[in-house]
Image (cartoon, rainbow, N blue to C red; front, side):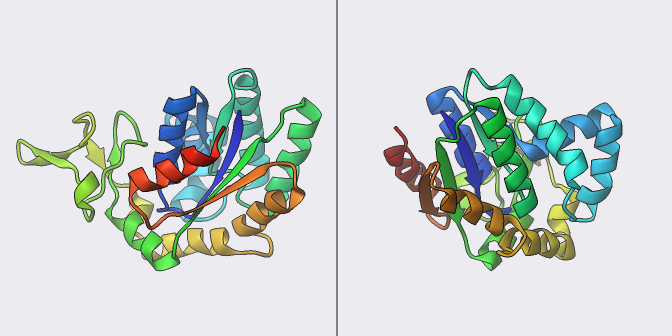
Length: 224
């Protein structure tokens, strides 16, 4: 089973992706994690990507596409859920072509809808776990609030150290990311519509403002 997940930053697509991964044994391929691995490793591509990520800009295709397609190829036999790519119409076209050439079918397109202002508030309140970025921690939501230990907030799931991405606290950077996502001409919504209109995959659309468990139930009910 291969799934392509869409949703604005703050919509919870990473959290839902982790749940689907656990249920079906898929590889959860998240473009941000690929970037972070390259940045942490000090690779040339990673350093180039970091400049764009820190400013809230879209990482150019010549950096992103090789990273993602190599990772997809490594997960061809197991099945995957791809989150965070494509982010533009051009990337969607490149991915569609690459999937056709490799013989990999895209079974589902998952769309998590969320109002832009709600998404912004969620981004500014989220915290990242050092052990697993998909462990949900958010200071504004009781259901996923971090827990306190020795006077510090730690991950509610595993007790790991929490941090904030610098660009999560930068309103201008958030707006740039959302400008890219909500752009239905050449941006991420245009990429989403490309795959929705292709007729090659089943489309699952859910309301991202609902509770995590409710969204999960709606997604699982439509996956087979």
